Amino acid sequence: MMKVMVGGQVRKKQYPVTIGSGTIATMITYTTLAAAPGDNLIALQQYAKWRVRQVSVEEATQVMGEAFRWMQFCNNLEPGDALWFFKSPLATWQRNAGQAGFYIYRGGKIVDVFVSLTN
Image 1 (tube, rainbow, N blue to C red):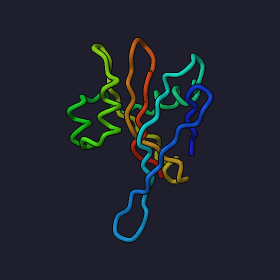
Image 2: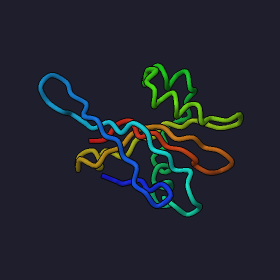
Image 3: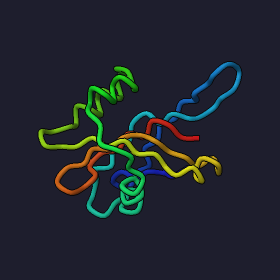
Image 4: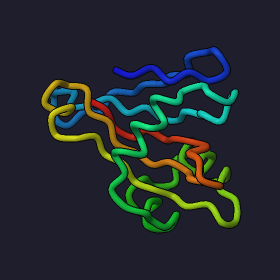
C-alpha cells in the first residue's frame, strides 16, 4: 500500500470494510497532501494519471455519505476548485494494491486527496 507523506510524516487511518463475514477492502478515511512543495510528487502524479472524471460535491456525497472526515475534506474546496474521482488500473486491484477516491484540483495542482477505498 502506498504511504502518503505529509510534511515528512505518514498520515494513515485505515478501517476494514466488511461484507458478511469477510473483510473485502480497507478504507482510508482522510489524507492531506498540501504540505511542502515537492512532497508526494510521484503520488500526486499517479493520482492525476488515474483520474476518471470530474464530479460535483453533491454527486460524490451521495456515494460517500456525510461522514465527518468526508465533510472535512469537502470543506477544503474553494471557489474555482475541481473535484475529481480517480481509480487505479485493474492490474493494481489484481495485485491487492488498488486505490480509488477523490482529489481537489486547484490552480493546476492536486492540493488534497481523499482515498476512499483500497484493497
